[in-house]
Image (cartoon, rainbow, N blue to C red; front, side, top):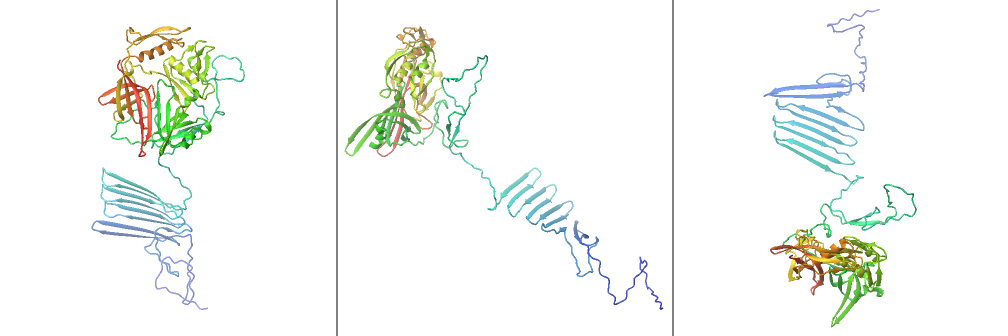
Amino acid sequence: MIAVVVRFTRSGPGVVSPVTIRFEGDEPPPPLPIAAPNITMAMVSRFSRGAGHLGRFTKKAWQSGDITNSVKVRWSSNPATIKLVHTIWNANPDLVTQQQLMRWAVWPLVTEQQKTNWGGWQLKATQHLTSWAVWPVVGRQLQATWLPTIKAQRYQQKSRWQHTAITEQLTSLFYNYNPDLTQGYKLPYGPRPPSYICSKDAWPTKGVVKVRFHTPGAPTSGVITVRFSNEHNPLICELDIGGGLIPPLPDLPTIDTTKPITPPRRRSYIMRPELRCYRVSDNTEINIVGASWSISRSQWGATISLQCGSKGDKDLLFADGIEQEFKLVINGFEFYGLAESFNYSGAFGSNSYTVEARSSAAILASPHAPARSYSNPTAKGIAALISDELIGTGWGYDFEMNQFNVPAGVFSYANKTPIEAIAQIAAAIGGMVYPDGETKTLHIRPQWPVTPWAIALATPDVAVHDDVIQALSSSPASTPLYNAVFVRGEQQGLSAKVKRTGSAGDNVAADIVGPLMVDSLALRQRGTAELANSGRKDALQLNLVIMDLLPPLIPGQVLGITWQTETYKALVDSIAITAQTGQNGTLTVRQNVGVLRSYE
């Protein structure tokens, strides 16, 4: 046995037993495996100072292996690797990278930047940047960007401060999308189109409502609550003209919408004259080249004349030998009439067909309605007498005067048509009749809604001035001034003296005797109308235009007039509207209004 003695020339620290000795030529042991979960960290810190500047950089890296703090990390295993990364995580399929960098330049001036990036299945990036330049002036910028691959959208916001007291902020919003966008919303802008609004809700009606019960009920006391169902109500539609906050085309004003109706003063008025005619039964248009329409307080209907363009147009108004109802449209305003007769005149190279007509209420007059004799068998209200005349005619009424009861056998007439009987009732109590062909309604109104001695303080229904008055003429229409009148009934009537307010009642007019003077209200209404017709007056004729700002006038309205240096009020007595096509094809539309101006 041979003993080998090993001598060491220098000692090594930390040597413990046993000691393994390997000789040259032996294979070295394999290197330790690099475990995946282990992490190796390398940190580098550098400091440099010069001219008052201080810079510092920090880098961090993680890699597989045991944790080691070193400037550089090397592995002796093959292959040799030196790897420094800036906070990197590798993940599949979502790859995320984050980088953080902080710099200090000149103290105390500080600049900081922070960037965060995400990349992967849907590429997204966001960046946050904060900068400080010169204190106390501060600049700050924030940017955020989203870039998805399917629905690309971008949002950018910037906020900047330049001075201490001055602030500026800018916000921009962008939407960028491709046809891949499956859902979108379109916001409509502009005036809404006209449409009809329909409903079965209970519709308010004028006049008296009669309720009939089909089954008897037990006697009850107290208040009875009646509930109605909308199930069997007719479907009623109203036209909504559309438009926005300000309608693009103003609706035609009605008489009771704005009081007074006053056309504005302008250097010029733009009008588009219109003349059309339609047969009501089937809305067939009839070609006409001229028309006239006139009515007064003493008439129960208007007189109408149409100049047809051809014989065929004339025949449309007398189809199958039956007089047809028509609708006349003049500058957008509608008038209804009933054709009754026609005239023909011919010359070399020309033919003329003129149709004479009256308001559609002529269906209640001769020869369309038979005459009859009548006497009220029971006591009735004055409005009920009018209602009896309209039974089965399709027409209604609107009684706008004071109502009173009429005893049995007081009212009677012989050989009169329904419209003649209604006109007799209205005239007996100081009223007049105005027909509305569109709604088939007869309006019973006072002849003098405002008396001459109170018209100065009344609010006019329509006010016109010399900018819309084409011409004005005046002629006297004076009668003796009366301030009192005796009104009495016949067999069962009353008798009273009606005098003008504030007067002595010493100028008495001729007595008025009528069968319907059976109530103090009837006496007062009839006496007021007679006193209002007396006194010094002027009959004026005004030639006016017809436009959306100035509709056709109605008998009985109070008209305010401003002509040159005068301003006064008068009562509308008559209206005559003409529309005529000239030789050159131009259409001229005018309304000639007759008014009464009272001086006392």
